Length: 418
Ligand code: GCO
Ligand code: MG
Image (cartoon, rainbow, N blue to C red; front, top):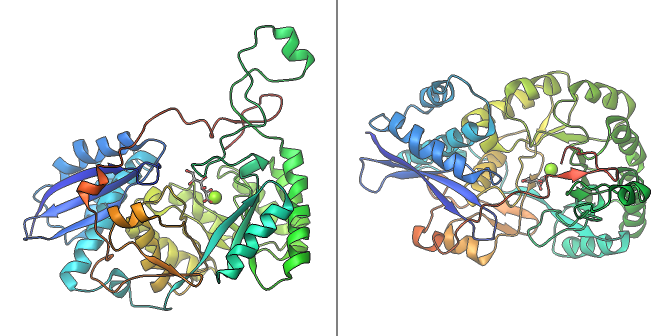
């Protein structure tokens, strides 16, 4: 058996660029699909797949996933960056899909079988003020969801735009025509997506007070700081929300502030989730080995696919850390399916983030997992049980333009981690 072709497919059914890799073989009708979605730099990942991995892999046996993964990782010599890891992931997940099809088993069966029927998910409730968030929380609760993430005005307290990302700033300063005027008003002239970290930090305990007072404690609530605060302010916020019993507080600190996790842990018992920005085992190893986090939130394509993610899950199990794989709109349905197969097969599953899969998504990706009653369900088809309709996919071309929401700034213009 041989790999005959490896190629990228770019599509944006919901306006968010997704990258999927198709690995074709010389066996009639046998191919696999993998997720390589790095939505901020999609064409670079596509180039890495089409120009580097395709020639490297053609003619090789797709059965040897472990060997191929290591070979792809070190072939560039320099490694562990998001572009190349995503490209490797696209192939890796596709190879697991092929393996499942060959074995005539869903991937969760290859991984040891189901530990649960379906994966508990959490949904995103947003609002401009606590009452609006509460109303959205109640909507999800009424639909049977057991866990809801609460954000007020998105990340850092900014208004949410239609793409789901927070792009609308408090203000976008125009080019200063008169520098003195800008100084008088203490307004920054840097273009960017502005938010006020102090106001944001103070608003979150108030929001949870309002929600818990109305609905009590029978719903899991979550929040994502998205590394928008200075470390000590994140600790202060984690302590302030302790009485509201969060299921988890996500990304309180940037990935390069590992030492602060020790201080955070010493100070409060709010469960901590971390990892969507991780690329490299050196980033997660201390957090897990020192039990500084409670949930690993890795974006599995960013790690290099299912092969490293299942090892990470096993490492976490040994240290009492649960999984909560990253599942926003910029994970393709193939990636969501890979998350789900891990959720089903890993004993230490915690919760799964998920989006509302639109009609266009089901049209382009038949077999996309289904949401029922607060849980995500896999089908029992071989592999990941998901396909791509390439003709439909071409109906939704991607649109590449400079990213604005990652240019997040404090009121004086200081650029901060997005
Ligand atoms: C989350 C995330 C996302 C990211 C996005 C970046 O927890 O869902 O923080 O919303 O911001 O995936 O592209
Ligand atoms: Mg997040």
